Picture 1 (cartoon, rainbow, N blue to C red):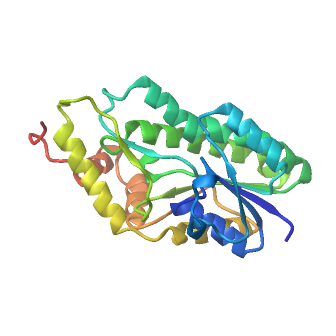
Picture 2: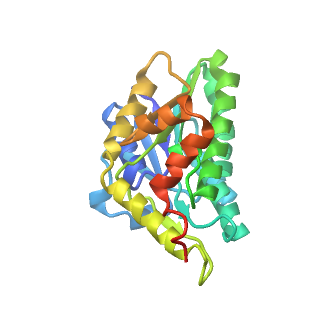
Length: 269
């Protein structure tokens, strides 16, 4: 094909599956991770060139852009999760989460979209999360960063579709990945038991989720389609969550979400 795709966070999980799927379609794939030198041979995908990228560091983004040149497909996927009470997360952790999930992808969009627009073709896909679409307990910072990325991507789509670009948000739900769920709470937190239970509930649902290849298949379909929608979801339970978002009053949807991810009231501590 002679076309190049850039997939961030390609060393594991959804990013790894997307990189493999695009390589199988004939794309020249550049996959990023923090340190490719530490990537085991068994984890490397044939046809994928691995380059270092730390989205929290603007200089790292600049080095990657200079090395890669133009791309035809940009998949903003890299990131990590946080679990903890909103009142206790440190501001430096909030900033780091937004650098990784929002500011870093914005820098990549601003670097690569001008070339796509000039050529009259290109695809930008942002991997968000269903947690950005409906509130869940103890995921506030992660959800906020993903929601910011989704809103930015939606606006980008309205601006560049006329130039021949396809732009979409994919919001997975319950996918078997190794996405770190970094705990952020104070020692002796009032919320400790509820946070542990919420994390256990998420781990259980993720273990029962779909394989990352399901998201990769969807991404390839978007890339190959003549036209695309602005928003997609996939994964175990995604249909139910999409229904809640679209058809139920917000208060009822949040009540169902709270019961799904949190302990009943009165069991904190």
